[in-house]
Image (cartoon, rainbow, N blue to C red; front, side):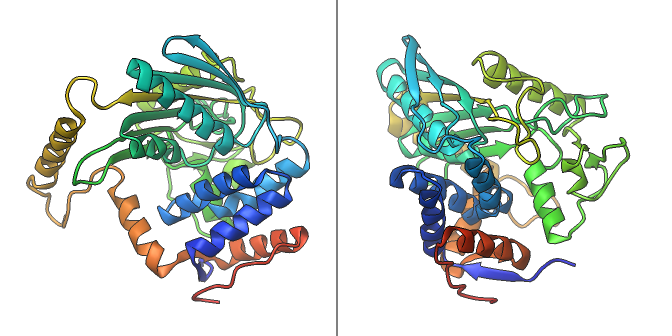
Length: 357
């Protein structure tokens, strides 16, 4: 049975989360940035990458596996490319600065690319493409991740679920925003389901013995998630490993430290960010009009039986955010208890719920 939900305002969660990370020695600016990323995930309905992760990130910071005050180094290696050393900083901080660097290059050359090494888990991948879309760039965000998935035909995790995110601005329509892991279900969602006492669907994961499991927590106890589309998802995950791991100089192919259970050292995660000017081949207004036309045609096309509306990638998350800005962000009571303990340990006030307490 799932735990009852307790609702909080997004503003109160932002303040709380910022205070937690300031207490963990992040600068005020960086603490606010991490907070923005986590709360944005909760607003968009991606609770697996939201404030539920605070205890995990806090533990890694306290163990000095993450650098709260990284000296991020950005070196231009080609007219359209920079190489970024994250200095083991919070992935949200490193990723945001890397995407900003890619956008600056794109303003000058049309296309900008930032390869990152020495980083950590960077949260919701869509956060970075939304950063690009806001400035009228087409954005790409790739990352590798700690081992959580077996390659097609395997039974042990040696590759990450390695999400990809792509974002494109539009005109009157909402932007196209795709954010997906290469597994049938994201590991974080499986973990969150396990913490809530909810089973995951069948045929999603294997336990440590290679047997099918519906326990999301067993996935993080030596088990493995399964790639979506069989060999297709596996191949895409390997490609992301090449782009974000092999090419950038980051750890790769199982060398990254597991976010959830390996506290023996920094993660050494790699990312790749791309920014492309949307007006490379035509005016920005024309591009946005063409995007609107495309989206209109797709959404107005014939619907399958039982389907009320054809949704574009990113639309469900946009709708969730619009709703939660008003109704509040729901968090299960078990996660709330974990966050209360973090607040007590840090001496930080815990926000008052607006509903469900």
